[in-house]
Image (cartoon, rainbow, N blue to C red; front, top):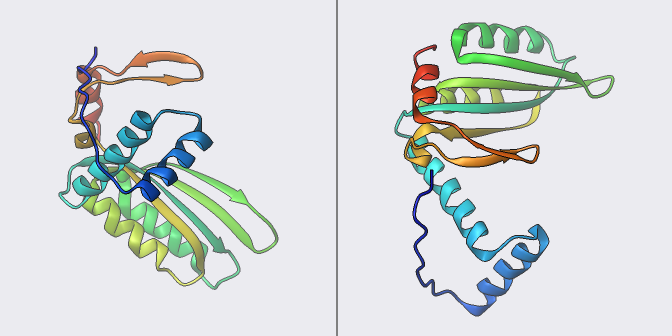
Length: 164
């Protein structure tokens, strides 16, 4: 269940280390935890362009009074078919809606789809968060949800990949 921890030295400017320590203090974690998070995030960015299996959340904030925008967003999601796993729609005020779209598919395809939706006239804010299977090397990893730790075994991941 555990990958062996390896200690190594890192050299950086004292001012950068000071900023890192400020971040560490604000998060209430260790330098190692922050560095691991940064490396994982960079690995995800590196894998996205290669078209690897991934899941993503696309967040859109848009003015639903813009002509045919709601229909365009809905049609686009239907064209994505099984890549759209779920959506959440929230009315923010009289003019703005927030939509979160959960996606699964090839990372490069998800990225292109998100860029099209984010560039649509009337979409005022948004972002995409992609998590690739390769970012963790495809290995099971232990983590917590709501205070209880558990791992997702590799066999379960393989079973889910086939259900696209």
